[in-house]
Image 1 (cartoon, rainbow, N blue to C red):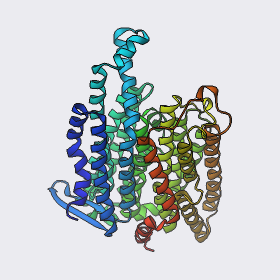
Image 2: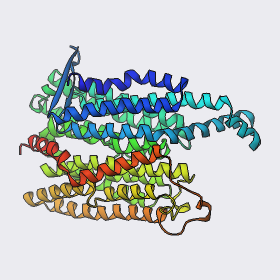
Image 3: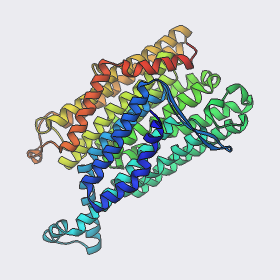
Image 4: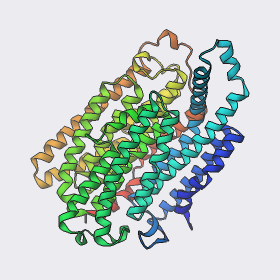
Length: 520
């Protein structure tokens, strides 16, 4: 399929001005469905290319940086598929949520300009052409930024050049910043700035590692990177710089400060992309840049990555258990889940690495469902405080079922994809501990199992308080959300069960790749 990856990456960018025009001139329906169509077409391109095995495209660029290309192999394919599947369904999910958000913002602007007004005046404004014009304009801007954000993530995982990788890595930060600053909750501009500063500083540290490698070997192309050609006195520094830069992206322990604020403040459809898709790209980069290109340094650093992952699992899980704001709880849960990825990456085994990548897939599906559940609750109930909810399963049965499936996925319970990810990850970690006879790795394995209990605790506690128990009197009229929101959730719920029953959909690509990079 000629130019499949080039189309998948650049069509959303090139068509984003048209989406803005459609939103502004026609309305949110046109912007929603056109964005959905673009992303669906690009998703199909990615899946078809992945079915044909390893697929590459290369294009002339500049002698200064090397070649511009895209690679879809056993490592990149699961990441790329999950990113665009989530982006595609969230384009539909966004419509009712964001239109509601635009109307809220309009009322805030009106109140600030007029110094308040009676209910009658507010109702008149709602029905005015000014509101329609405002919603249309905001829809155009939102969906244009949404498409650019999606393409930035995809370009990052398909890149075949260090500078190309860095450009896409930075591109996805810019629309994310504006999406939070324009439509986030709370002090959104301050939180957006915090998000941008933290992630940009991480990206600059990452760039220092890239420059060290590229200038040492005289090329930035992935195909030319050989650890043996990098001076021994700088190769460890380059590896550590890359790990720190990616640790910020992963929101790993010590570099996690920005995530609970950004993910809790972002509009929920964007939280459902930031958390399941974007932060996990840091794990992809560790696979590609450390394990594949710097295997000697990976062998040295693996045990430290393992312990770092364990600390992240416990910290994120403990903090999630203490939250009353449901989005903030899911944000801390994402920190914990990134700890699972680091734990698997540090296992130094084929199955541990395969389980870590499968955990990205399963986190994308499960956490996507949970954040989408939070969005339905915010829209239909008007509250994100867990203590103010209860007994909603009877009022919102479809949302409740999807939330339970998402919860089972995050907890690693069969038949969801979470079970296959966790089982494989811990199997690999135990295998390495036994083969090396390492007491430290054996203890880490045991503590990792304890961390799964912590995960189950905060997830089950959330389900009990939100969907079961006594229904508060003020919620007696609550009902399920729009089909724009429910249908995407049902698709995602079905996907996690299918992957749980047929994990070879992804394992057939992941395991051969991991076996190759470890020389197995």
